[in-house]
Image (tube, rainbow, N blue to C red; front, side, top):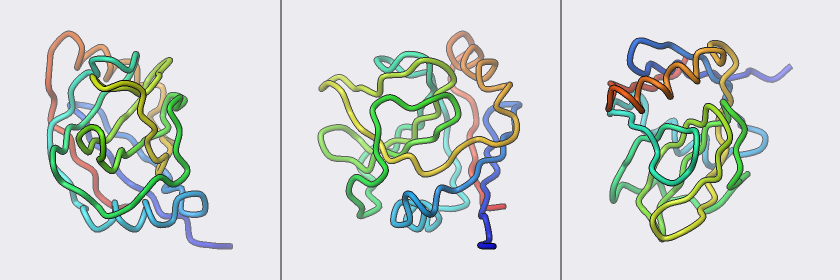
Length: 140
């Protein structure tokens, strides 16, 4: 049985565990792992519906689309590798159509929340009503 790698995600007061989707997105997972541990801030999306995002600006991880979607389910974590919009991580907690000010985007689904998913909507409400929260991803 292959080793299943996991991520620990801390967002505000919440902690989530996510499974890396290494079979479906091996290049994306490898690229994201080079960023870890990753510290930033998470805010509510502007155009995508019920999700929070981590803006990453001009940073690039050197990958193209892989296991990409514009309609992630709650807990399906995406990374947009940059292009027509800035690089970002998207963490959906409800109905989401991934978009930016330039229109619809497709992000690479690289991880899925496996523990704590029942608190994703609480995180969404927190960043919507209280603003940016500390955000950290680490392996394990």
